[in-house]
Image (cartoon, rainbow over all chains, first blue to last red; front, side, top):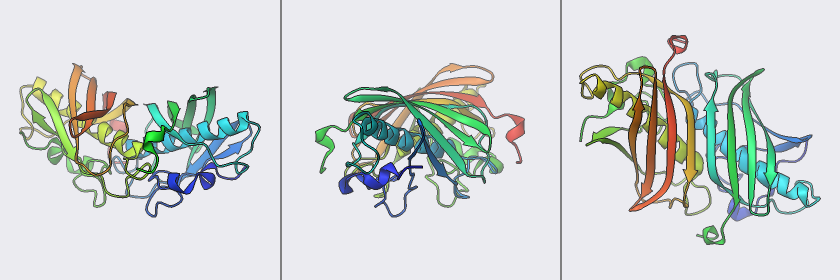
Length: 155
Length: 155
């Protein structure tokens, strides 16, 4: 397993509620390579419920979103022949995110998110991902990642 | 403006992190009728950032998701000739959610989410929504709401 992509974002890109290492109350999603896929793991908090016993869909979307953007960054590095940590992680923002909720996601077990970059362009990357509880895939997503525009820097 | 749809969900459907009145630390999205549209309003917390000055996409997805499910519920009531509060709000869960992030969403101002139920079936409702900061629409969504299966009750 590689280092975490999010640990190598520049400081001013490390405040994200979903995955920023400098956000004190956020979710701290951590994305690593596992062969040709990326993986992250997250155990929801008791309050992250939809109805008693099941995970709230907004959390699932949040995990898939941050993991997809990190996958775009990791794939861009790899395409340049670099591993995570050999250069600052490139910055992407979400252009679109489609989540299919296939089954209710049980609240309790660790969730595992796996993704692949299926198209890696200069400015845009397409990512497909799944979210699983135990052996069961409960959600899948397609995301379009866009290189962060300069107008969002140092806001 | 009508009463809030979420204030009339049954107690065992009122724990959602996004919109449950009984979730102590959640977002408490409140959806009301405003003519033929539904509307909810939410001011993000300082920690809900993507990068300094802009709102994190997972929060935007969460707001659109809960507001869309409530819109499905409100539209189902209205189709039966009932206003919010005249019967318990019907329960829907998210089948799919697609969010297009059109522009960066500034962190600070109140966000306004507006939605319409564009197809209202017995078991499925399709909802289109927008999220605005001031006069600017910064995200839009399409969601498919599905009547909650009995297997998710009293888990």
